[in-house]
Length: 172
Image (tube, rainbow, N blue to C red):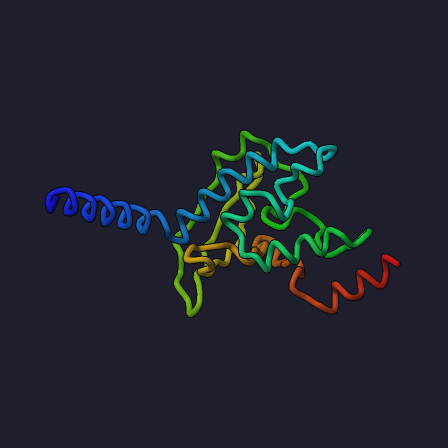
């Protein structure tokens, strides 16, 4: 019995160590973008219910902070809004599956309350699109909460309450 208990405790410790090693900003970001880019490239706009950007998407629930998902969902409900001019996570209108292999995820820089890292998205023959991805801990996991386009020095203002209020007023 003692031997069985020892083996159980040992296996739980090994599982915990393995889970911890995979729970870092770089791995989280790489896994998210590999899966998201395939989903985004294969997405049929006529099938909005299965959009990779839908708030209820399992992919977003696993890798994206809840307030970021809520903001994106809220903004998408506004008719003719101009806050999300392109996909929030890629800063592009579409993506090709063959570009996924060009994905590069940089080393995370730890900061108080989170981490930042650069992501280079392959966009065909052009220079890669460089993004800055911000992550923080939520539900004991690293989750993406903000993305900036550093190639064009631009950020979609999904957390700008005034912009959302103005977009709502304009849509009426």
